[in-house]
Image 1 (cartoon, chains in turn cyan, blue):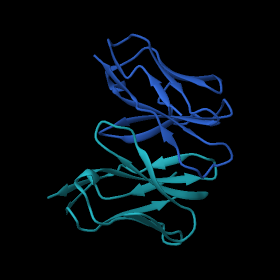
Image 2 (cartoon, each protein chain N blue to C red):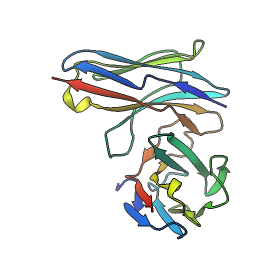
Image 3 (tube, rainbow over the protein chains, first blue to last red):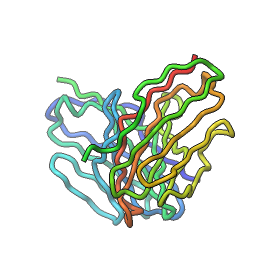
Length: 109
Length: 115
C-alpha cells in the first residue's frame, strides 16, 4: 500500500513564502503531483516531479527526493487567492494516483 | 475543450434509492478515474479505467457500487441501494493517453446527499 503524510493546516501572511511538506512510502513510484483545491471546487494540477530536484513554475516550485520519500511545494509572494487545500499525490507504475489528505492553507492579510 | 463533464451536479435522494452518476471525459483522453471525497476520508480512488477497461476497482466500497464505461466518451457510477454513509462529493477525472505519469483533469464533481 501507500502512505502519504502532509500537515493538516498551515497559516501564512500575504506576501510571504510558505513550504508545504509531503512524505510518502510506496512501491513502483512513478511521479509525485501537487494539486490545488479551493473550497467547493475540483482539484486542479499544479506541478509534477518524477526526477529528484526542483521544478519551478512562476510563484510555485516543487521539490522531490526519491531516496527520502519527500517532496515540498513552495509558494512565494503569497496572495489571498492562494488560500486553498493543497493535495500531494503519488503515482505508481500501475498508472493510478493516491492522494494525501491535503493541507489547508490560510493566507492572512 | 469543455473539460470533464459530470452530471448531475447535485443529487439528493432517500436511503434505498438507486443513484447514477455520469461522466464525459475530455475528448482524446483514454484513462478515466472515479473518486469520492469526504471530510473524514479525503479523496479516495474508487475505480480506474484505461481504454474503457477497468484496471483497478479495489477502491469500490462494496457490491452496492458499480461502474461502467461503454465507450471512450461516457462512464457511469451506480449506487444501489444508496445509504446515508454514501453522502460525499464524487469526482470523475481523465488523463491523456501514453502518460501514465501525467496529470489528471477533474470534473466539477457531483455532491450526493442520501437522507
